Image (cartoon, rainbow over the protein chains, first blue to last red):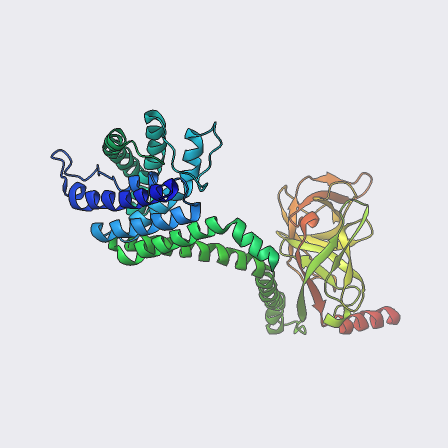
Length: 176
Length: 274
């Protein structure tokens, strides 16, 4: 089996696993000091963040949309996750260019996946996760009147979620 | 066609992104109650604002129509006002035939104030019943006399013209003289030939005297600014500040004295009898 196809297969299995963990495990975590719901564990963006780099940008956006819709079904928030994941998928190449400026590798090119260092992966994930969190809460509030709340929730949830993603990077060191 | 396809291929990702975002927002608005309420509220505010702005633009575009209709209404009111005093005259012992003024609203389309002999043009002419010699006023007072007319336009001699004199009187006591421009300050006209025994105070209001066939009595013109006496004569020369600003004329009213032909005939006959 060619390495590129294998990489794709791993990518799709990863989506399935991350979604399962998100909706069956993480969704039920209730932090004792977090009654107001300011912080959410948003792990599912990792499914799109770590999608194989050989996928074209339109395909990534489409996958992000359907993954978002699936999560929305479980969170009973139609469109919120889908909309924010699509935005994150759209800006993914920009974040990718930031961590890979030297080799000239672009997303959408045929490859067997790239192994990046921990710092690079964390930087790349953080940028995308922050963007995702901001749009997720913007869609949830749906008005800029509560911009302060949106920003507080974005920062709070970003720190909670990045812990999970860091653990994921440390344990699995995903290829992109 | 090829260009269209090339354009779609080039910006395909962006269009896909846009389409999916629109679908997401559609889902958010339609299936989330809180967001739906916010959306509806915002949509109301937005549509209200847009409607208000649109109405402002519409009002701005319609302002000329509105101004024209208001000027027409004003013309009718002026007409009633000018003809009103003469109703009393008919009750008096004089039994004067009521002077009958028609008022025609018009708009100034060309104007000058910089020369010694100023004229302006209005957008009404012979077709609207205007002819040479009719008086022209604005809402702040007398502004000129019709010099000539074409089918649709009329040339008006401005009161800021050294060739024109208007009969004016002191409102308080009725002493009259003639109002003329000296050719310097466009706001100052001189009331001349006022007898020296007339009691004049600074700030006295001057008005049309009604002694000419052009303007009815009582059109307010301005106030006395300075009291001077012509040297070697028994007459005053009173610089008066006029209220009409000729330099920004817009809507004016042409005054048509319907009794003028009869009065002129009478005066001509009286002249020939002497």
